[in-house]
Length: 321
Ligand code: ADP
Ligand code: MG
Image 1: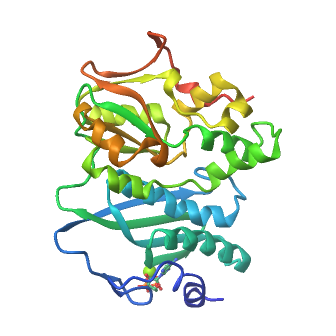
Image 2 (image 1 turned 180 degrees about the vertical axis):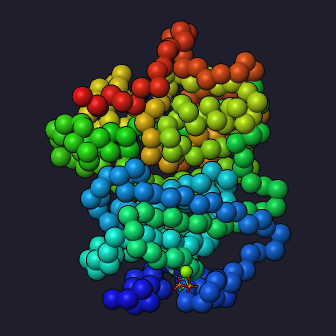
């Protein structure tokens, strides 16, 4: 199989079909029509084997995550995803591996109506780079900046699950219960980018970030960009039942704060927009929870029963021997 055959077979028809793609895979570049009155939103992320996913990860998960991490960036901007480009570096052209990789990528692309419009294919150590393009009404994008002291801090989903799932994948966390382990592994292998929630939040949130490196650090980045501090309530963190069952309540909360790879949204809402948020995007339906607030004093603190907790940067290292 030469490079041309590989692209034709696995990637020409991998994503969704879109009428705004004037020219897709096959020419020197793609031609795309951005809707008038909208801004083009662009993000790019690389995943390297052994660094962003374990060696020997299931190829359908690698394909899925390559796109998911980028969809999450667009979600955090409140943007609508539309087109992706895929730069794939492979050690060899293994057909079953490519079939599963393209299936994982294509499944998520079709869920969100994303067309794969181009890319590059090279030989070398396994890595994927996806450039994601989308659009947002002019001036309406969510930013990390924009939060103010007193704004309420929210997080979607149940952070910490992916870090535990990765630990199970790598044999650092002992497996006990098949259903529980399956749930946690799936949260790492197939995270859910909050694409719809991000777009809906445009009318309510003052600031937004997606959490890829851990809630505590990423909430801190939002706070710094907003010129604020942030206070997170340890006992308000939303935890999944499988996570607390697997590691206990205390460690589950630490993982929710410091574990990576969740791809949830962390956002702030001004107090006067809370009623509208709850009315239009009920939290039971959309799966987010208030976990704290922005403060005037700089810094990122975790509070438990009125006391500030100490957190080391080794927080996420709980599974190392
Ligand atoms: P060029 O000779 O211009 O570098 P390539 O041979 O790299 O072109 O690619 C040929 C066509 O296939 C281009 O349209 C390119 O965007 C597309 N392409 C290459 N690799 C991929 C890939 N992994 N996924 C999707 N499209 C790809
Ligand atoms: Mg090329």
